[in-house]
Image 1: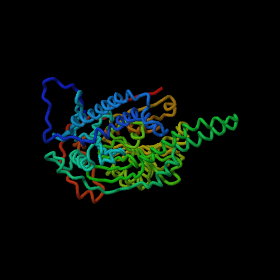
Image 2: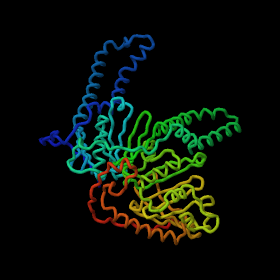
Image 3: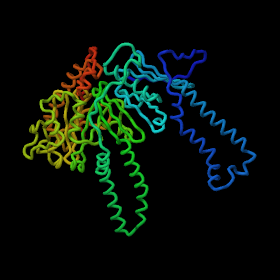
Image 4: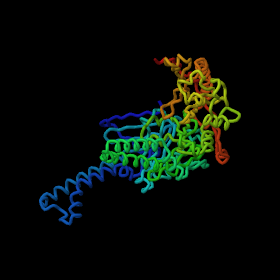
Length: 523
């Protein structure tokens, strides 16, 4: 496992490790940035009554408490000193080190804990700046490894320039750009080439035309209809909490997607976004496990799409933060989608990738005989159209030399792309109705995330054949992947970036096992 963590109590008589040249401390203001809520709570508890009395024009201190004011002040001072003392101890015992192929973070003064992550297993590194941290010019580094995001290594807080430099050093070593002495100052931040940016007007339009808006309009229409039918006007009062919640959701989505910018550099795909709280992600393309392009019905008016990805370490999260971190593109045109897909899969394995990807995004099978190869995709047979009256002509798959493409959805267009080497296991699903129409679903298992690759209602013979062929393709692709350094597996896209690359020879590792076969019959 790439991430190791342990927590042990300090032992009497055991000498504490000294801070040598390899260990560094975070910024002294870090505990106050993290714990400002505790300080605010102390101030609120002891100062609320006095503040309210001052606003009302009364005495600053309640006359009934004159005899106890010194004791209250002393108690407040003790609580404040204990809080500040805890902050100082937290800062003093928080140290980090980048050495011997690991990034290590030590925390705790009563119960010590060390977290470490192997550099060649780092999936992504985020620079997070909450609003208060931005005011002080600080940033948090968050290292993600392949453990579904439960034990990420967090380093908070560092000066922004130092955080960028440390991230550049770790990503350069993880990608295989540089090697040698592990000194952070030796590796400057890699240059980048901006690929695309999302205008605020497009972001606002995408929110107004989102599935969430459709649900709100439908719900509001139902409430109005019921209110008119029952002549009960109090139903509108029940909408107030919902309106506040919806407004908060829209604001959160706008805040997270504002100023979205994507760039490519030798250390990976760089994503920046945020209005008040900003975040800078770096996703090595070789670490992306699966990609999904979706298009809601109303977005088809303007030709907009969004892209989600599965990245080992991010896991599954229903929160807005989790959703934004797995978003490779919040809203973009088809040209933007093709550009981002080319970064994730530089070698699509076909002669005309634009035609193939366009067929996956918007293609439609023939109304006649199903299961035929149309624009490269094998679709659901016509005999099974009753199982998906609207989607059977869209459902289809195409295996290229490097990835498996799966398209589905007549109204909500979806295209899923899984590189062959990222297929971990597979399963065949066939319920009673599927057996009646001689079709089956093929499910591909990758790391946890918003993308769930599934081939819908393929001819059972073709599904079994695809099962065997995909297992062989995944096995061969993993044999060719002889290094954990993603840069050795992916070609650069931008000429400005290509001139800066310095790839190292790949180190061979034992061949990996083929995907686990799992046959399952539902029903």
